[in-house]
Image (cartoon, rainbow, N blue to C red):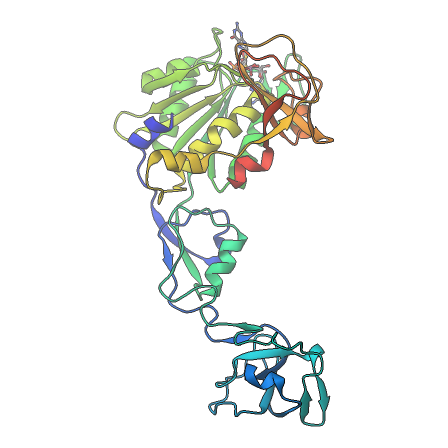
Length: 408
Ligand SMILES: Nc1nc2c(c(=O)[nH]1)N[C@H]1C(S)=C(S)[C@@H](COP(=O)(O)OP(=O)(O)OC[C@H]3O[C@@H](n4cnc5c(N)ncnc54)[C@H](O)[C@@H]3O)O[C@H]1N2
Ligand code: MOO
């Protein structure tokens, strides 16, 4: 899937946004620092700056005071003297260490290093040297980095007030199914509420996408073709839910074939079997992901398939040296944890169980029906039972915490 996308996808367009609007966006070009951080040698503690050789003296004379925010004095510190200073204050020239105030006594302007153990105050003690964190010219972040609060803090530390990011991915979302009704309306016999639209819209927004919501599309070939054709012009990625299976009312697959090409359909995964992937459009080809209608299947397949695809299209990891490395970086990380259950009958599909960790072991939700969302809300993650495998109690399985899909 990613190989096909990599062939057709274009690098997203860049824009510059203020730092406080950049959380969850993807950095469009690498950032180099124009300054040293910290910009000057400064004290790591509240105390007194001195020459380390003078720490053996019985007393030193305190000759001044430097607060954080003050400039360093011009004159070098003379032998036998010390300067009162505070955490973050610049080290005066001539001084090479700072003694903590708890380790000294003060007698008027005389400083007595009463509790300084011999040989412990050395050049550099309690000093944070200039450029300790970042040297001017260093690359601090690579293009393709997903910007989290810590990255914004780093960018602020080098004085950057705006940041180049890729434009938000536009995801066209459509729900199919004549049985679907929006929440807020009464249910008629045979109807159910459209939960996938809310699950997927809010999730897509939470991972930095702009959602173009096409609502509920009637189960007809005409409606499916017309909506997908429009979406292929307006969106960068189209996701549909429902209509992927084998019934006469399932028209999405045929519409994709007519408007572009179907890459694959059906996958040995549970839930999520009728998942489809394709490309829409004759000239500008945009990816299409058909997610099964069952809400539990929509939940699992959006994490397992849509998430890495979206990350790729968002430009994450563009600085990686090869597509394989990039893909590796975009994959969620699994933990290996023992099963608290047994399963005798192997399945021909890879099973993604909605599960919790209880006493360090994987405990799946009782009912794994793909029509259910209670299991998704109860779960802390997805446990993977490989295809053709039975499970013995204590057997180690891959467990993907739900957060691992979004933080990777
Ligand atoms: N004869 C076969 N029938 C089915 C097969 C199969 O292989 N052979 N596969 C089953 C599996 S597995 C799944 S998963 C579903 C997927 O079907 P579709 O993707 O075609 O989805 P629908 O038929 O439209 O709906 C399935 C189910 O989900 C409900 N649904 C649909 N959309 C929503 C929504 N937006 N919000 C809430 N619920 C939704 C719908 O009412 C159905 O109950 O097919 C099996 N059948
Ligand atoms: O693949 Mo379906 O999602 O098992 O119910």
